[in-house]
Length: 593
Image (cartoon, rainbow, N blue to C red; front, side, top):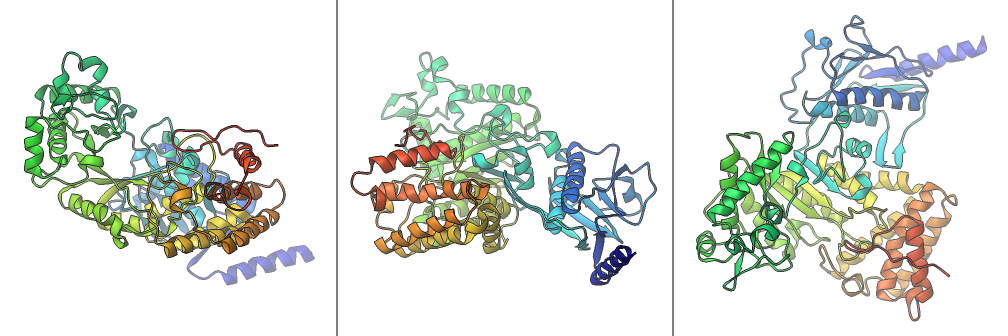
C-alpha cells in the first residue's frame, strides 16, 4: 500500500510541476500516448516512427504502440508522424518547408511530427530527431549520443518550423559518411554514393548524375579517345594544343566539343534519371593557366574580363541544350583556380549552378581578413548574377591531415556570410578517406552540420556539448588545448589555408612554457578517463595532432634524435585507427620499440 501511495504522490507531483504549456508523455515509465502513421507512409516516415519508438524506449523503458490512422479513431494523446487522416480536421500548411524542412505542431495534447511529402519523407525524419532533441537526446558522432534515462517525461507544447537556408548540405568527412549519423545531422548530399549513400529509408539524398562530380572534362572528352585525331578539342597553350593530365582543359569555343558534351550529358542523365544535377566542370590542374587560349577563346575571355567567360558561355549552351528534355536538371560548373573571377557580361542560366571554391584563410572569417579579400569579393559578385550559387569549402590541411587546425572561430561567420550572400548549397571538404581523424574531425563535422542547418546556433554551446559527450571527464582538458591553440594562432597573426607545412607555418606557435603546460594537460586528459574506454580512445586520437605538431617542430620529446618517438607515433596512429597521413599518403607502418 505504501508503494502505491508513493507512486500516486509522484504522479500528482509530476502533473503539478507540468505547466499548461507542457505535455506529460510518461508517468512512472507508463504512457497513454500512441504513434499514428498512414498505411501509405513514405520510407523515411517509417524510419521516423521506428526511431521515435526506439529512443522513447531507451529514455523511459517503454515504447508507445504504433497504429495506422485508419485503424483507430482520433484520440486525445497522439504522436502523429507524417501525413495522415488526422489532417482532415486539422490541416497543416507545409508550403514554407521547401524540400526537407521540418514541422512540429501541437493540437491540444497531440503532436504532429512532419515535413514536406518529398524526398521519401526526409523532412519528417528530421522532425522526429528534433522532437527527440526536445526530450534531451543529442546525436554527436557515429559512436556518441546522449540519451536521458527517466521514467517521467514531459515536453513543452511549442510549435516549431525549421528550414535550412542551404538546399544542398554535404560534409565530406569520413566520420559522417554513415547514413544514420548523416540523417541525424541533416546532411542531404554527397558528391558520390560510394562515400555517403542515403537510402530512401533515410530520406535519400541529392546526388550528381552518374556519380560524376567535378573535374569532368576528361570524362566527357577523353584525351585517349580524341586527342590524336582532334587536338583542336583541347587547350591551346603558348600556341600548342595539349591534353597533358593536370595541365590542360578542353577548348570551349569549339562547336564539336559542345556537341559531344551535350550528347554525353544527355547519355548520363538517361542512365541516372533520379539525379537532378550534373557536373560539367573543368579539370583539376597543377597550374592556374590551363585553360584554352586559342584565338576564339582568348577573344571571349578578353571581352568578359575573365577566363570564366568562355567557361560560363559553354556551360550556358549545355544548359540550354538539355532544358527542354530535362527541365528539372541543373548543370553544375566550378568557379575554381582560373575561373573564380566572375565574367563582366554573361550571367548563368537559371538551370546553371556555379560552385565557388573558397581557398580562404582558415583562422580568420572571410569578412575580417585581408587575405580573404578575393574570395569575399568574388562570392559577392557571383551572388549578384547567379540564382544558384554553391560553395566548395575546405576545412582541413590536405598536406598534413594530422596538423592541428585552428579554424573553429571562422566556421560560423563564414556560413553566415554564405547564407547572407545567396549561397544555396555548401560542400565542406575534410579528411574523406578511410580511417579515423587524428585531429578534431568529429567535432568539426558536428559543428558544421549544425551550423549548415542553422548558421545562428550558439557555437559555444555546440562545442561544449560535444566535448562533454565525446571526451567525458577529459572535456575540460581538451577544451583547454583548443582554447590555447586558437588564442596563440590569432595572437601570432599567421595565415594558412588548405595545404601548408605545420613545422614551417606554425613553428614557435607554442612557447616552451606552453609546451610544458600542454604536456600536462594531455596527460591529465588521458588519466581522467577509464583505461580503454571510448572516451579515452577519443582523447588519444585527438592528442595525435599535438604530438604531430611537436614532431614537425622538433620540440620536447621529438627534439634531437627522435626515431623512437617517431615510431611510437606512427604505431599509435595505426593502433587507434588513424591511417591517413595526408590526402595522398597513408601513415607509414612502423613498429614501436
